[in-house]
Length: 165
Image (cartoon, rainbow, N blue to C red; front, top):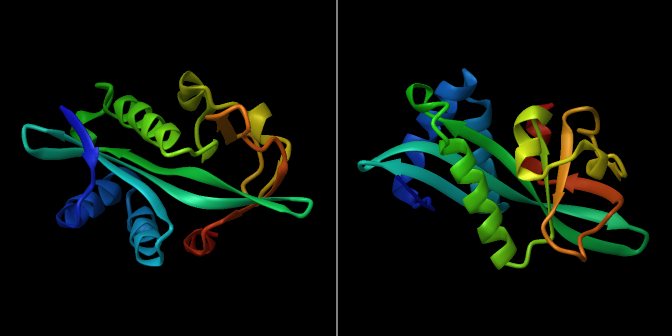
């Protein structure tokens, strides 16, 4: 299995994986809208024997604290083909994504998901609790990728997320 950056020709397969994983078009539309708006920071696929079996997207978000605005990122969505789950594909995507984000100078990532799953990658609800966000709650988590990561502020997600409410 290889993890690689998605290319335009992967779009239809990515849509199919997202639709099957989430039981509808919402996440697939989110990725299309993020891509079209230029807010998709990183789009990764897991490929096995020439077939895409997983997808992970990271998008830009902004953190406002006093008079300063800092860039952050959001992990969403993560999906693995239904018949390929529980084989480490999702974990490989997340780890590769974190490595690429660190290399690109990103300092913090937020995720809305199952704490039992994302805790293994270092995401903590306590780290996200100091941020104001529409997604604040028991499933909202953060992971600092750098020592200079923001520790508080008001988070503004990309406009494409507004269609999820």
